[in-house]
Length: 110
Length: 113
Image 1 (cartoon, each protein chain N blue to C red):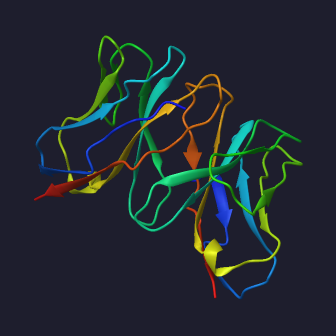
Image 2 (image 1 turned 45 degrees about the horizontal axis):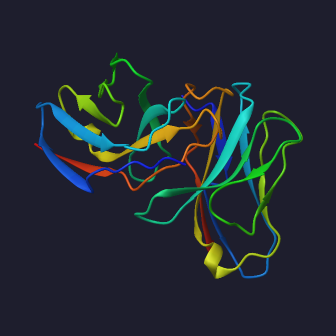
């Protein structure tokens, strides 16, 4: 299964944009890029996903590199409630499995 | 809103006991998953199912077993609990498409003494 690489931790100030990077150099053509976040003592929560084109929803934006070997999750205005572990995951259309990596712990400072 | 339910939320049990962790979803999803997560660590896929009567092992070897007799129900069983089974167990479900997001329950935190 293709792997993803994310920084262990990042910091942001409240109400500023946050760009969370993810490398996935071994991505295959059928892999979707999913992002989830996990708040303390909760299960992961879906944030956004994409295949080739950039995506926007009410929570975030996903920017996907043209070669698909990297992507960036963009939180336009971080709030204290956005402090969580963010996981970038490749969802394989071949195996049907969604494999989590270590994720990025985002701290948001007031 | 919670459309996927896990019970119990917390469980403390002695070594050697048989336990079943319950997971139910009301969304009609065909695919269901069990992940295991130690504190501060990543999630590991231990079981998944494509639908009724389908069960597959995940990437992390587990002594637990699962069953899928009904679409909405995906229980996980440990025949003889050991301290090494202490962990958080997270259940999830999705449509059977790679562009379909996973919906997670809030997990069962299991402690085996």
